[in-house]
Length: 271
Image (cartoon, rainbow, N blue to C red; front, side):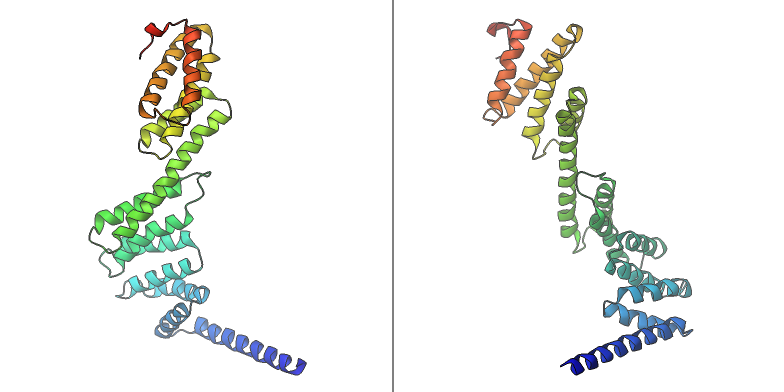
């Protein structure tokens, strides 16, 4: 058994050594047609590190020829295979810039957005890359409205926008949780303006109401009445849109408390 294991180990080492030796011969070769052929073979075998290294060299060799776009394309895909989405996106953009009429141009335009999509971070982090992905997919749809990839691009745009909506909601809620009610009012109001159809609309509107109430409650006398009036307007807006909200009881408590602070009678407030 031990003898067999040793045999397998030796054979494995020899195969690896042979493979490495073969690759080094390809790297050192000055036969660029041969290198191009081997680069594609390595790519097809998903040996992306090897294909990437070869295509990186061949980009300059084939620049200005009718196969330059092909080299850019497989270099980009090789980087994607290594999960280097940043460099993959860079080479897809270069392909589009230098060869806008290439047979690879349509896919490259889509892949620019997809590379950004793959690098889009969690909602807690800065969402610039998410917005870049949306913009790139939208540009793809505008340029190739009849493409078979349009449906998938729209689906990914919707997914990315949901991430922006959640980020916006989390930002507003963060200020509320920190007790910075002035900043919370601004952030939550901006979120509702930017994403009026947000699935978090009820929560956003409730925390906006609560933030306005708490801001008014803790205000100096010169500003209290104005802020209480703003909170009352927010209350009416909220209950009109969500009369059966799970937050209704708490919202009604703010309303009752606000009336007391403003010394208002029932007939003096909006019904």
